Image (tube, rainbow, N blue to C red; front, side, top):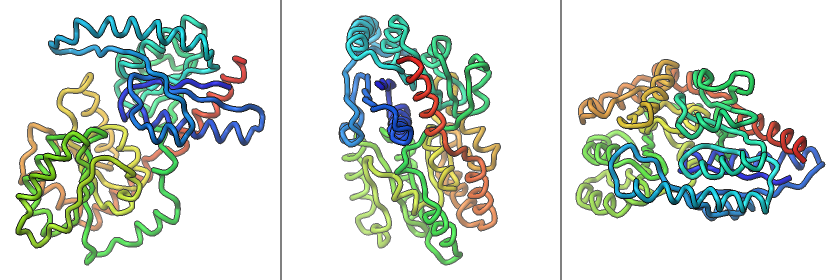
Length: 371
């Protein structure tokens, strides 16, 4: 059996790999087929992980559809046309049994090529409001899976399933890890704040953390994922800000990396409203969400609202993001034991487990029927 994965951005890449690793397990359990997996995109995103999972990368040119003026808007349509013909040839040569689409600009050429070659398409949407690519893909797909139940209205219900979000096995907690985490909450334990701004980091969140750093370090430990492009700026800023701060050792920052070890430590997370919300929910970590103001159909605010209504999170809109409010919301979660425990419970209760397994089983079923 041959499987092609396609999608753009970290929020799409890691769920793709989560499903791929589960497909590998399903194939071993069934003892019926071997699996060969390919990743079609304009970038590798994480070369080491692809190599570890034995997934072959195939570069496909692709252009973005920008909603703002850019000189690239004149050239990118030609990239996408080229990408379509490259994808058509590569898919014809490989001729996979299933193409699993997560969305993003780089998946469009692959999606169209797969349809032209009559290859079954499986789509997954991570947001409560689908993007343009997955909306279009849903019309061409054999099956559609969604992370938010509210997204079902955008697709054909007969071929759509609410599965939840596929998460890499290494990012999911074990029972022992959860028992340890919840057993450690005491009034005298110093709490840990995890800050994440997505795979590329968030300058908005980074700047607010830096502005509030002295006050936060008086009470809390901070682990800060800053993104690769912000690493040098954060290094310079913190060297100045924390030069004479007695609590400077309580602040740690990193570019990107294995988040699971930080999930074990975190008592609250400052984050955007992307796919990481599901990982936080799996670990029972309350979140303070600062949604991106300008996102496709305001999907980040809608994502955040769903988590807030479920009692898992607190929202701070960017327009209201001021130091006093930021500090007060963090304190309101970490200093109120009853509120913190309730938010932990709500996150665990809200998490829908087994998404990667459900999707993998259906991919294998479709793949076998296509052979």
